[in-house]
Length: 166
Image (cartoon, rainbow, N blue to C red; front, side, top):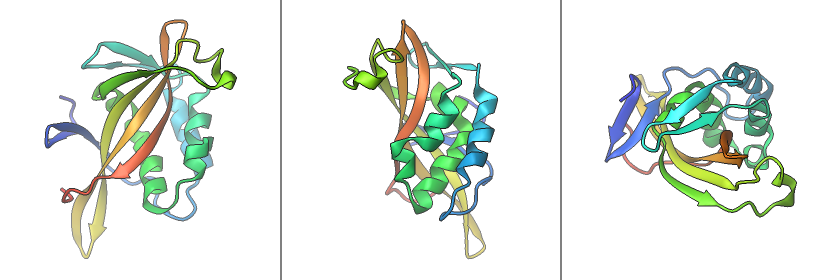
């Protein structure tokens, strides 16, 4: 177990300790991209499977400029922006690995081995009426497989859990 990890109903969630990107309406995605660049060249091991996932130079741009990200609004955009702080921890605690064939010719070179998808989770601190609690989110880490090497591509399908906040 990592330091900022919670297990809720048998699932692993990583705690985002502070809100760096506060605005729900106009997320400063350029600032998020700059923040993510610190991960380039790093690798993280998915504890459950022993898979080593690398962070390549294209990750910050994909995370902040993907079609999925461009469609996010409100609390989900804020959640994705702030989840950028716990990328490594989310990968370490990822679960439910599944392989997906590459079906898009534009990814033939960069994902010639297809894709892995893993379930990831994180919590975001919120203050409401002077009380602090955490909203719980789940998402999918999309990993491209190139020449038998795994690279983080994006975090998508972010959803707020309907369970009671912690």
